[in-house]
Image (cartoon, rainbow, N blue to C red; front, side, top):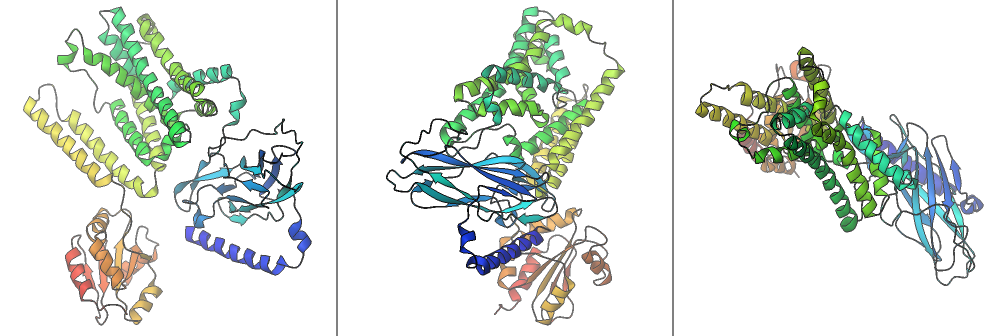
Length: 598
């Protein structure tokens, strides 16, 4: 699907370029015409000048306002846009005006069904800024500027090249230009446009941040840790009320520590890298997303009663219980981390306001979010009597915990779905093995289990989890073999010309096929031989029964199941077949015997 889109883009470009050549000399007046507004059925584009006139040597900017129809978008990144058809805005003008780097707004993520990936796009209403400066000495009064828009506006089903012929404006240069009332504020050079929330007062932002922090306590992601935290603090502090308050404050300190880390990261990014930390940036990191999904799976197992969290008797029996204090801080930090996967929009709004401010106000606002989250815990643990008003424990609590477990699994699946397509299955496999290891850690031992047996079982569980992580979690290496999709005509054509053909029958659900890929086709020496000998490499996907390769596997090659790998050697009537997983050396020997390609 994605290849078809790229080809369509290229055809559109060729057509547009040809049409431009044919019409280029027919109407010179049209080429010189300039309009500051273009209206189409997909997008409206308007140009606005920061000042009515600019003094010689003065600095100003153009604001290019986009208003896309609902359901349409521009691709923001050249790295992920199909055919590199990302939005580009450039200018054509005279030497009297010099433009600097364009300032785009922050993009947002869009799930592209054709590629199965989340891509950065612009949609709705957004503005791109074009800063410029006028020459110090100029005789020009009116300088025409043409704004060139490149890229395609796309929906879920189609893409269109936007006709912006003649888009531009005229910059007035005057020695007596006032330049006192700007129509808009220009973002800092090289930084993304800040949120429109920057116009609100500081007190409103603090209130918004506080409410955002409070809202984190009702997130489903935080629910599993609430009973653990409250009961642990209260149980450890039954003898001393002052200790209960101290444990609660340390738990709140852990929450504040998480938001202090965010504030520190924001400072580092702004000071050293000239960019900002936006709420949600963490979800652009597959490692963070995968780690959060696995953590939620483990917590769901806790809610189902697969394992329990307790304090060792050797620690609980000590009077000072230093581990209790550090544990309270750690639990608070974990509670704040768990709030991130399902944060409401109000949190993102408060965070966005902070990014539009200087470092000190921004830091204060981020910390206030943590204060809002921590306040209920501080109140609850400082007044343990409030716990007596809660309903007594019973079967309802167990059912509630199990319900929360299913909610956590739902959130974990949603996070895994946000991973790149090549990582999803591996993370799911590892989540299954990890769940088994957690069950093995807790369910295979009891209070009467010998200490040596307990350690042996738990060491085996850890080793198994580490081994599974080593197998499933590393990023998949780039495919070294240039596989072509199954095509009988392509295969017949190659064989008729005496070209060797290698067919790999595989399926997405076939674990042995994954082993074949790792042990055979990811070997660099074999991949180099396939390329050097000009072997036509065919990936025959049999995932579904209506795929052409599935029919060919049974009807043409009389094979019952995958994995099956075949090498057609020129001059031989039958191909060499491998049904196992470890045939790399045999394949290499045959490839080496093939004649060198002319």
